[in-house]
Image (cartoon, rainbow, N blue to C red; front, side, top):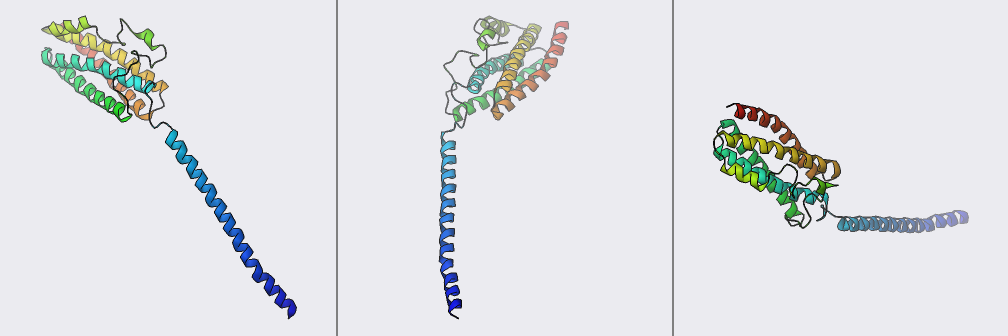
Length: 217
């Protein structure tokens, strides 16, 4: 009987020790989890949530907004003055599509806390991009003189000039969009750029066919 009393006492005494051990372990685990969460929150707080002011993405959006702006002007001129209904329709479609994309690009820049008008030179975001400038203009862009000629043109000359200039404009725009798809890791920017590539490549065939039709008229 005394032996049994000692054994019972030992067992009873062991329970608080086990509980204390579990309590210490639980506190340690809570501390580790709290530390991990704190480190994760700190990492997310310091990690950039969007491309920065000097990023390729910001440079592309700014330059492409300018590039698109000229296409919108050209499209509206064709819509108002071209002789072929198909050219007028195409001009309107290009104008509306690219105007909508300009709004998207400028909205993203504002959401990123960036000025839609940057201070860097055109094409500085692209490796060796400045070498692609022609008289300070981005690839495919019409000169001021060419734009004035398009505004002054009448008859089928409007159709021919618009289609010729827009083909060059699309070639330059496709080149720029393909480049950002290659170098960017921003899924939204890559999606928009790839959309531009696919849309403008499909329009290239239409532009070529309509140019032949306008020249034969």
